[in-house]
Length: 195
Image 1 (cartoon, rainbow, N blue to C red):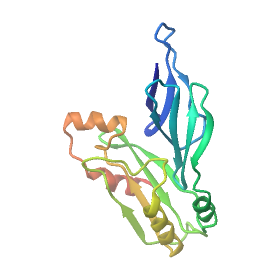
Image 2 (image 1 turned 120 degrees about the vertical axis):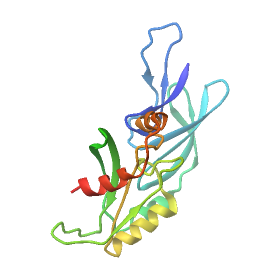
Image 3 (image 1 turned 180 degrees about the vertical axis):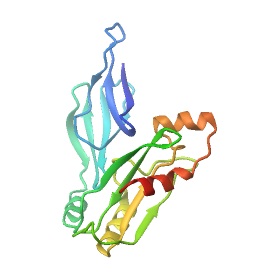
Image 4 (image 1 turned 45 degrees about the vertical axis):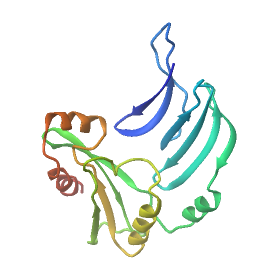
């Protein structure tokens, strides 16, 4: 049996194989490449369309054979877009976790800093918010035109940040939704506890 599962604290969509007859140890089929992997499986489980992207990397879509995860054909490589993004004057995004920010629950966040960032200076901040009723902003996946807009803002001297409140679809988010906790104060705590 082949299953797609969440990995760590963010949705990364890794593919695993578990033998029905046992032993019940999951064997990872997805390559050990940081980022988000999504799969559209054939009914037989022998093939899949595999989409990979990461925070600053546009998606690549290929057809893979399973269980070996061998790429048979690249369907979309986005080579021109990838080269354009690589040429941008940008810093790597910093992903962080604020432990115990919301009633003991950790909150995830990211920050993009301007090229030539100087931590002795003050910068204006754009804090991007989306967290209700569905969706995460703190994922290691391509953000499209929003990511490019955020890069542009950093080039203009802004810090751009985002944080997922406790009600997002991450594993602890589903728990807090079931408990009916209010969502919103966490974004402030992500900003104020991150220094």
